[in-house]
Image (cartoon, rainbow, N blue to C red; front, side):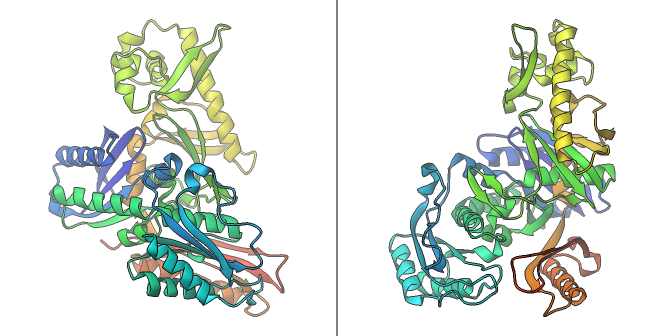
Length: 518
């Protein structure tokens, strides 16, 4: 039995095959093409050719893709949507999408703020205005809108009105309508939660395209016995159906795949991971084998959101970063890059652009291309460039730490050949075998998870009993997502007191994860 992992990056599409004992059978890199499916097919065909495995023995296929992130950032392929907020009269002062830029705000075909929602203590703010909701859904149906975002005030405390509005939406617009409910996507904070829900609603066509495209690519290559999964941004997997319902959860799955892959390849469960690509370098943290989550609101493509995202810092440094020497003798590296054109434009490949990869080859750090083509680079210039690279990386390492103590550092990604072997702030620097395809490996070996999150008053339900029930709920959610019950473990427990709530109210969040059934 084999698992296939594919990760589509901005520069390369990586593919890996691992066996039932999690041994890497083959790993390859192919340039990412303008049409990502050409790149996926090329990577798929290459890894099958290199490995020589029987296609019928591939039982699981996992894809990590940046398609949703790119759609938001580039403002492309986003579907028109309707936005219904349940919060009148309390929230009329701040309309939906109030701080969105014009180039993305145009995805909204119509919005309405109607009566409904709850107070922070769960009391009804106003009854749900069903007639106003029905009128809005009829208007959206007339405009041909196929996706609706529904948000309610304090729906993370009580989502009764959101669920009632969603049921009414299906009744009016039909069962095929795509509905995104804010209580299932974001956390506390109406505007940020609503923003994440709007983005999720607008991504349904993108999700449909890459899920169907991946499935078709596998079928075209004769891989018909494999269960198909998508990587999500907490380092775990989700089914195709789940990905179509919550495409926003694939945003930033690339860095989390690399973090999971780095943890597996190095056998470290706590470390800083540096993933160097062709254009950017991502810094993340492994906590107990899983990516550390961000505790602050995250901005995606200029939109402020508060849904689950990994704690990742990115800098403009990669294997294709352009190196320049200024008139005063100082040397800069990046942030601009030759990207996927590195095999054409870098000096070692016969190009005319000095890149960070050329520097690594000139200093004998890695053998790639034709070293004779960079022999003319002055050693002083090369060392200055390496020093600049080291400074950029060390500053970012410091920003990821929560204490002054040195941390273990794991280098992964094809571009990590440009980094020095010793870094200030690192207890040890590890570059494991198969480091270049850690992202695809992370995709292939990922587990499935379930997360339970709710506000609980410990005066009404004692803490011990509340946490016990929450853990059971998280385990059941993981099993429902496809995890083998006996392998499920609790990987994160968090309860945060909310001082402005009545009694001893806490936000309880429990995450459980387990292995996929073979």
